[in-house]
Amino acid sequence: MSGFSSEECAAPFTLEYRVFLKNEKGQYISPFHDIPIYADKEVFHMVVEVPRWSNAKMEIATKDPLNPIKQDVKKGKLRYVANLFPYKGYIWNYGAIPQTWEDPGHNDKHIGCCGDNDPIDVWEIIRVKVLGILAMTDEGETDWKVIVINVEDPDAANYKDINDIKRLKPGYLEATVDWFRRYKVPDGKPENEFAFNAEFKDKNFAVDIIESTHDYWRALVTKKTDGKGISCMNTTVSEGPSQGDPDAAKAVVDAYHHHWFHHQKN
Image (tube, rainbow, N blue to C red; front, side, top):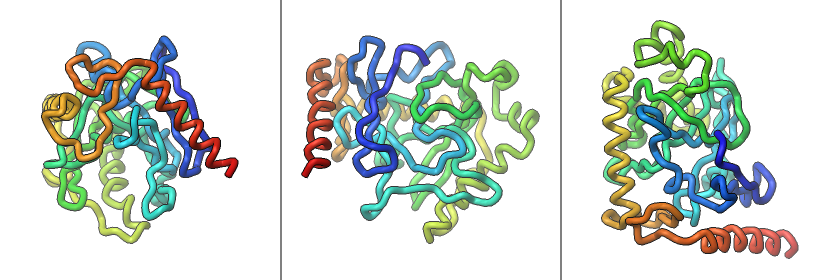
């Protein structure tokens, strides 16, 4: 999407790798807090963290200043999702809707959302239509998975709700449930479970859930909720106490470059 660009620090597939986001003026911003949730009426922004068919589990670093994208780490090791026969890596572009947050009462992760569009660069912001939502229960907490379509997709006009996916892409939603059910099993974990008998809820239900997580996010960024270590540093949320100026944002990236450069030399 025009207007946003990104800057990579360190080498991909390393613990140090980060991707910082910039606005149209070239100033550093947070993909979590500084990209509006809505791109247009009934059109949401989506931050793509993991391109389709890839395996590295990339995610917005919620606890780091400016929330760059980094590869998830478990027990000191970089995380990858296994190839689950018959799939290769993630079976859709996977990411997050900005300015949403699942309150720790629900889950401390972003809403995941999956888009049905062509493979893309490592890092992109796209505009999407919401079609439905799946309620995965991950270790006792609800982890909503929103299903969307890129408005630039040639078929986007044909998709208005979850039933259009069932009609036009038979087997696709079943594959999605199958993938989410099994993707942690190669790591030695049990299968994931789902609420609502693993049925996708419709567009209106999905938008209601997204709106509620937008309210949770606003409470987080205005410090009405304790984020327990989540960084709310941003450059645009005027009513939030964490708003910084572009110079403060640049200082964060400069410090990261500096630290990483010296870390490499030593």
